Each structure stands twice: as C-alpha cells, then as structure tokens.
Amino acid sequence: MNPSRKGMLCVLLAAVLWGSSGVCAQYIMDNNQVSPAWLTMLRLVFSGVIILTLAFFQGESLWRIFARRQDAWRLFAFSLFGALTVQLTFLAAIAHANAATATVLQFLSPTIIVLWFALVRKQFPGGRVISAIIASLAGTFLLVTHGALDSLSISLAALIWGVTSAIAAAFYTTYPSGLIARYGTLPVVGWSMLIAGLALAPFALSGTQHIAPGGGNLFAFFYLIVIGTALNFTLYLKGAQLIGGQKASILSCAEPLSSALLSVLLLGVSFTLPDWLGTLCIVGSVVLIALGNRGKLHRTQQ
Image 1 (cartoon, rainbow, N blue to C red):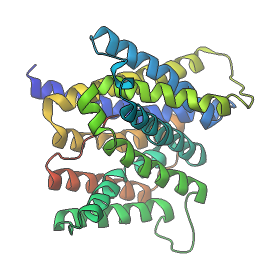
Image 2 (cartoon, rainbow, N blue to C red; image 1 turned 30 degrees about the horizontal axis):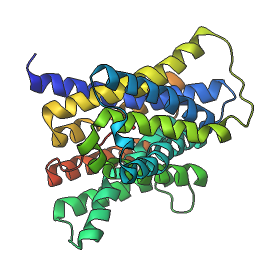
Image 3 (cartoon, one colour; image 1 turned 90 degrees about the horizontal axis):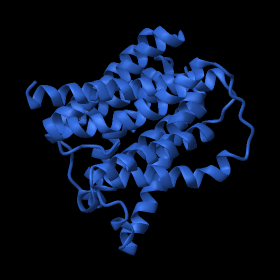
C-alpha cells in the first residue's frame, strides 16, 4: 500500500474510533453509576501512561521538557486547560445529551479557531471561511432547536458543555505547537494526559462510583481507554504525517457522522431530520475551512 492510501486509511480509522469512543463513553455512563469526572480521570491517566510508554520505546526523551521552567509551566497550562478541559467537557456533554450531539458540537472548534485568528490578526476572513461560519451556526441552530425558535431540543446544560468542549478543543489544537516542535508530539500529549488525570483525581475520587459486573463493561472500559484514545491518537498522528493536515482535517469529518450512526444503531438514540441536517452543515463547515486554509489547521489529539 502506498503512503498516501495508508495515511488516508489511518486517519479515517482514527476518526471512526474517536466517534465510537464517545458512544462507548455513553454506554458506560448509561449502564453504570459513574460520573463524567471519574471516567475522564480514568481515561486520561491510563491513556497518558500508554502514550508515554509508546514514546519511551520509540526512543523519545520523556524528561527533557521539565528541564526548562517556562516550558514546564506551559505543559501544565496545556494539561489543565487543554487535555483536562476538552475531555471533561466532552463527557459532560455526553452525560447531558448523547454522544452524537456532543461530538457534533465539539466539531465547532475549527470555526472558533478561524474566528480567533481573524480577530488576533485583524484580518477579515475570506468568502469560503465566512460560508463555513454561517454553515456551522446554521448547523448548531438546527441541532439545538430543531428549527423551533421558542424551545431547545437539548438541555441548556448540554449546549453549554458542548460549546465549552469546542472552545477547549480549539485551545487544545493551537496552544502546544511550540512544545511539540521542541519535544515531540508523544511526550507532550502523553504528559498532558497523565498530569491532567492526576490533577482531576482528588475531585473525581471523592464520590462513590458503582460499576456493574460483566464482560461487556470490561470491554467498554478497555475500548474507551486503549482503542478509543491511545490507538486513535497514534493512528491519526501517523496518518496526518503521511497525507498532511488539509486532507486529514477533511477526512476527520467521519467523526461526527460515525458517532451519529453508531448512536442510532447501538444505543437507540433518536436522531431526527433536523439533527442530520445540522450535523451535515457543521461537517460541511469543517471541509470549507480545511480547503480555505490549505491545511494550516491541524490537531494534536481528542
């Protein structure tokens, strides 16, 4: 298989795995009495350990980032406001709505990124980017209201958590570029996940969690941590290196679509015509942004 096809396959598979990880998280929370904070802590700690182990066996330097105090503080900031916030808000949005809605709302992050850079650089966005912004706003409106101006189709809490997740994802995507350039992607993301999980632990462990016995639950936890997070990240990283950020951004649009389909097929989530139209609008906005920015947008994980 040539590198281009291999890269496309890696990114597509990673997108499906990320979409399915949200469905898996919803399954866990629906069938157990566990909080989003506890599940986030578990996911971050174990995924961080897995990624750092992978980095170690690939010969990456794990401790070099802590030698410079400024970079160490940047890593802690990225851990708390990036890795921790994006994972916790995403699972909270799932808990208040469902995996499909949470994934689609988080996919607003590219629109937030281009708006932010347009404000910082004081550059008016081009026609394609403006079209993408309009499409994303229209998609959010359909997803949240089903076209009815006087009511919400999801709870206000779900909307707030979902939009916060998109903002956090935008920060997660753009903030660590300098750290990654100096220390590599695996050490930065691995440490950020582990630090974030350990920082959340005192709060997540304060409550009582009840996990139902059974092989289905065990597989769900394994899938969420190992396949839906660690393997997903590794595949996306490899694929993006082979095909570039532009194509990777477009192919990653399989995330919300796979999450919506799996939610309907496996969890019985009701996804109406306005939901599908809203999802397609938001997916279309990401395609427009990716084409308009020629691959300048890329991510470090989800």
